[in-house]
Length: 195
Image (cartoon, rainbow, N blue to C red):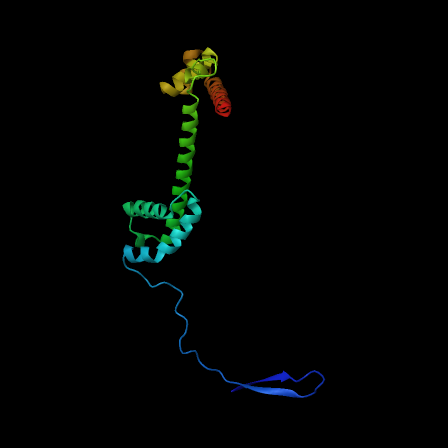
């Protein structure tokens, strides 16, 4: 039996001695580790509540958490068994993040398409809007750069062969193709910003 000494009342020099009795807990807490499982269904039952909560946060207000969990599990099961994964919870959470990200990108593309369809309406002066084409962008390049990109990107020639056909060294052909691609990227970015 253990004892503890406690100070008495304020102003008193007396101490109180208390006997402490240790009583064993008849019902200890259960083991926090989940029971080992031997099939995918049991493992999924254990993981589902946490995965659903995670999907509700990752999917945002527009995403259905059950759909995200179901799609992540279905895609995983097409490739392998859940019990074969080292950490199936982490693997499925990562899959949910990727699926939610893909859905957000898909929705953004859909809205951009809707906005572009709205631009098809005639303008105030009654004319249909004009759209630039890839050919228009290519025509902004000088003829040698256009020919070089055609030979390298479309016909699959190496820089040495394409340069020889155009009277350029291999290094000059590489540098010219790099500058032409950069110019096309900048033109396309400007067009996207105008939309």
